[in-house]
Amino acid sequence: MLEIVKFNEDSYNYPCLIVLGCFDSLHEGHLELLKKARLQAKINGLDLGVMTFTDGKGGDQVFTFDERLNLLEQFKVKFVLKIDFTEEFKKIDAAKFLDMLDDKINVKAYMSGKDFRFGAGAKGKSSTLKNYADDEDNGVWYMPVKDVMYEGEKISTSKIKTMLESGDIATANKLLTRNYFVSGEVVAGAERGQSLLGFPTMNVVYPENKVKIKQGVYTVKCTVGENVYNGIANYGPRPTFGEEESFLEVHLDGYEGNNYGEVVKVEFVDYIRDIIKFETPEELKAQLEQDILKIRQEQDD
Image (tube, rainbow, N blue to C red; front, side, top):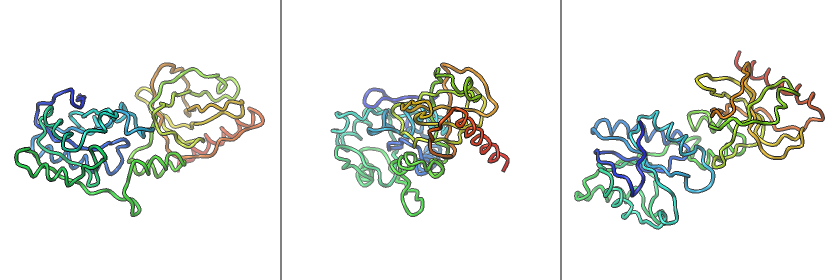
């Protein structure tokens, strides 16, 4: 079971290796760092801990804190160093930050990306950690890991956010090494999908603190309980019915059920098309039939 260690509040007594970073998106570069950290922790008989911010560094996140916990648990991380990115935290300088960790946690090693910055004004960097480790009184060692590149540029969370917002879901998924997903509760809707269109849908709450993907229609996979279904999802307004508010509405091929109150996982596989205002529900139904046919053909290829 993954343990949560609150910065400057909780203690962790077993000798450990802490991976420093934000880890908002857990992209390919992050995973390469974690693989190396897991190996080093095993070789040196240390528990593996990962630092991450509760709500990122402000703004919307690629994955929420709870979603990140699930991903890190799969990676056999022993504990997460949970930090709230408050105004008070931002004022802590790099040296003080390391001293505060040492005071509460039995740190024997640090690892980070080579470009990692920390402390007030982001003045702490790899060389700061190296100098800290070179001081024998601190009793730790430090290992930086090179950035992972894609098409000549460093893979970054900000780049992935831009891709998600522009609809380039396929490339974002490649850099994440998994499909971008939303974990949300199923809530009641207008129930037009079944009554008017013959397409039963699930209305899924899109978390407020997550990056908003480009409005449009997507190919998706949806985990309901222990089962995974293929389908299509509309994220955005419903102009055919005069609704401007953004919704995440999912239709799963071959599935019917009432899942109100249940949390489902919606994975976005590919962008199909923009949202269109149809003159009649019948025209919308015809388009949905084409969308479903498209995903069935893709499955057969």
